[in-house]
Length: 303
Image (tube, rainbow, N blue to C red; front, side, top):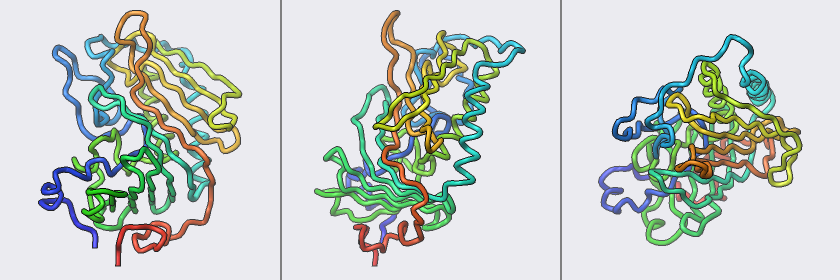
């Protein structure tokens, strides 16, 4: 049976604090980060990612309202809307390797690698951590509407593995430790939804450049890269520079990266988060067994 978070986990000294990863979205989030001294509240869609807001615009003013002519983001929005409709109509499930890297509280973490199975309805996630060694072998399961809304997780080896399988609220402090987003926001559909939300927000304002780059490559896949930049720091914006790579064949986003404004004049943009979906295979016919802790291929120890 899965143990619930409580005194047991506290007694473990937070040993499972790195169990969970999430998925890389631009507009969803967990907790409001404290604003720097003198900063005004940022006007963003959604909440704020665990780990903090961009800092390069912390004390900036507001962006000017957009002109009445067609906004540069309209073409990108149309691509995102079509992609979202295609995902919802044509993709029932998929497997992939997720690679993430996130900056939390100013510190850029290592790349983490996970094999993932994702089902759209009911939203279901199975994760097996492939690396680095500190998280290798960890497994996570989440199925919307089951297990009282909790996720199941266990460590791969060492002292942490002795704790066994635990049941955690996806947005609990323990589940969110070391992660910008909860597991409920993993996947290409959620990523596309948030891209639409943020673009809808940003098109209210000017000071936005959008460029399309065909024939980009991500892990050998031919993509169209959409780059959005806000050259001047403004508190209205969630990022200085963002790139979305749309797989030309699958018509889904398979990579997203976002950058803060440079820390000094003429400096390089600061990476905040990046997520890549590699080796995507769609419509595998996943069933409940693929998201069952009793599956003998998994190591949750359920009876």
